[in-house]
Image 1 (cartoon, rainbow, N blue to C red):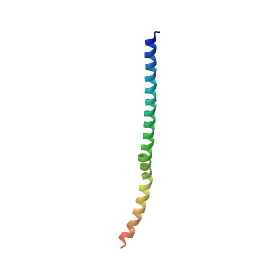
Image 2: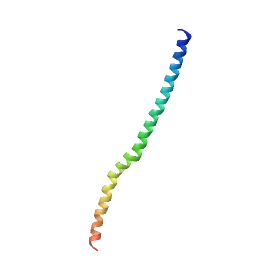
Image 3: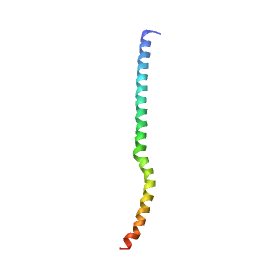
Image 4: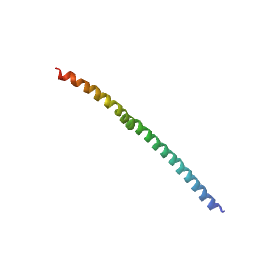
Length: 69
């Protein structure tokens, strides 16, 4: 191969390496976005599945207290 072809291949390899690094950063960004979304949206929603019935049971027991007044 002549010198010009080697320079072009070296430039292409550098560009591919830069693309790979950017892709890895993007992948990590999406991973952390998923983790934060789960922590801030899904986990509280699951918690509400347990909290709402407990609250409703407490609220239902207050019904007898208010009607006696």
